[in-house]
Structures are given as C-alpha cells and as structure tokens.
Length: 147
Image (tube, rainbow, N blue to C red; front, side):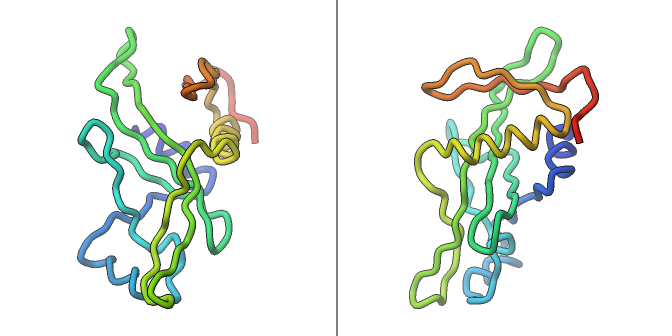
C-alpha cells in the first residue's frame, strides 16, 4: 500500500478527506473547494475502502481512486487489490448551502486513462486482461519511470 501511495503522490494525487467531526462543516461552507470536502465511503463486500485519493482537475471536478484489499496474495506474497477510478463532481443543494462531491455512475474510461498515464509515468506497468468488466493488472516495472 505504501508503494501505491508514494507513486500517486508524485503525480499530484492526495488523500481524500474522510468524514469526521472536524471537517463535516465544510459541507455547509458555500466557498469550500472540492478537495476540502469529506468524501463519503463506498463499501465492497461490506467493508469501506482502504485508500481513497483525489487528483483535482479544476475547481469543480477531481479524479478519485478507491482501493480495497482482496484478501489474496500472489505466489511471491504481493497483495492483490481491487479498485475503482472515476470522477468526483462538486454538487450544491439547498441553494448552495450544502456542497458535496458526487461520483458519476458507470465506467469513466477517461478517468481510467488519466490514472493509468500517471501510474505509467511513475514507474508502474499495466496489462489489460479484460474489457467487460474492466480488469487491469498493475505492477511495479523493473525499468526506471518515464518523466
């Protein structure tokens, strides 16, 4: 997990804020930026994600990646992670008094392409194993990253 975090951080990805007592009031701040707002968790197999990171695109949208441990390991002991990538959009309700990030439904191929490009530039190799549902195998490369 630390390798994933370190690689994303080199490409301007940042941890999303989790809802908590100290930051839920940002939902009531009409001037709050998307990256300041807490992101509601998503569940997979009854468990929240272990990693939620954002990459701001402009003031109104950000890419979002979520990862869950699969519970499986490869023969060499490397853990297998399940994940989603999409786009988070700033949404205002009640005349702008409440703002939150809303994730678009469905497959966002452009968001996936942007994530894959960032991972490739930071030294990860990837293989597309299936298109429906989308399955990418992403692993550290043995060669130096491209700048």
